[in-house]
Length: 233
Image 1 (cartoon, rainbow, N blue to C red):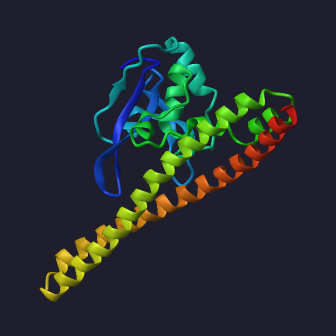
Image 2 (cartoon, helix red, strand yellow; image 1 turned 45 degrees about the horizontal axis):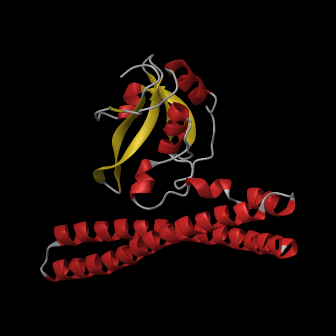
Image 3 (tube, rainbow, N blue to C red; image 1 turned 30 degrees about the horizontal axis):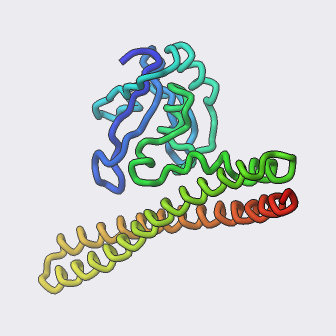
């Protein structure tokens, strides 16, 4: 590892170890700039030890990247930022932006949840395209691409939500059976798994609600663009 490297560690999720990668930028002086998630997610500089939390630290290899000084400068420019968003601005988005200039998350892409392009297609840009003389045909193509991304994400999240709901029912049944057998240890473990499944369901539901809001904005902008196309035709 060296100054300007994009590094990551494996973090647990709901007590399951090594579920996802947490990314940051190595400053070369024993510190790391990354999105630190405490009570309030913020881009901050911590010690390497604080970043690692006793786990192994890996280097993310990028085929094309800025020189180390620029990478660190880009990371420092966002110190104090409090705009964390799992789908559009998480720790990997931040580190990739510092290293390569691309605001993307390969982990989300792997799960079909890459919404990095949706923010740029939000109401402001679409309204500008529709109302300020931009090419409405191009605007419509971009909008349709965003809607396609949303459709994929919604399908994935719905499957996650349904599976979590099923898991809640299953673990509750397991807990009841364990109690009938006087196995309080197994019942307790099953109830803990039920709580984990409930948290997963709530997270998926929250993300689905966010997508509904984005979809509403895109639908409104779609109508404006269609009106422009009709006027031109």
